Amino acid sequence: MPLRESDLENAIPLWDELAGAVPQLINHSENHTFLFSAPHGEAYCLRVHRPDYQSMANIESELAWLEALHRQTELAIPEPIVGRDGKLLQRFTTSAGHVHHAVLFHFIPGHEPSPESNLVDLFSVLGAYAAALHKHVMGWERPAGFERQAWTARAILDADGLWGDWRVAPGVTDAVRDVLDRMQDRLRQRLADYGTGPDRYGLIHADMRLGNLLVAGDQVSLIDFDDCGLCWFGYDFAAAISFHETHKAVPALKAAWLDAYRTIRPFSDRDAEMLDSMVMLRRMALLAWIGSHAETSLAQTHVQGFAQGTADLADRYLAGPIWPGIG
Image (tube, rainbow, N blue to C red; front, side, top):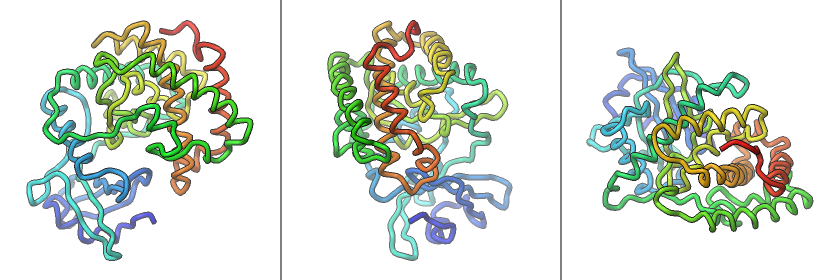
């Protein structure tokens, strides 16, 4: 069940910053996000984790990467705040007896960009951000006990995938299933042939979609590292076009992303060729997610026609490059 502001009674005392602050639920997707307006004029965002999604070790590993990125890069990303006990990750119990983990962040102003706006400049920023993240992780020594999920073909395409089974998602008719079964066989083989060498596979954000961006003037902030994990670097482009893979602007966005990425670190023709496979892998993850998260407004917004749209994209993938001539 969705959390309410009244469920946070035992969470507020865990941070000095929240004394006297008023909470407001602003997002419910994988987790709940509450905006707190404090009496002294500051604002904070409290992320309350879904109990059965990420382990303590997973969340602490995400926070370790965030802290390293703050120390070692200039990227505009969330800044977590320690609680009264000096720890970033806190735990509280609701009046109903449910235990939740929570992390408090400094509020970042801005708005989510619209897919109907001119996104070419934004995707140049995203390409540079992705390259900076990947360059960082290639030289970063992970702390002992670091633990994050891997977004592999098996973890997404198998029936027991991390986000559920795409086969039982709404709209997966026999005809859609036939196309997607043929596509996934091709996809698994191409990913296996591509391999997981350190120049193409590592720790990534994994959810750089429009809903996880905040734009304020010329400033673009990348938020919500909750799904960060091990995957192919090109998957960060695929995540950036989440839910909009069939939009007519995607070829121009892909070109802008690639050009910006290559100014920071290498991205070979082979890597660029594999972006179609990354897009299909992400689209299948989203199809499974829509089926397993039907209660969320995000799933309800995109469910209509999503399975058929995925099959249409799969037909293009099987026939040749989805977007010929870009890479």
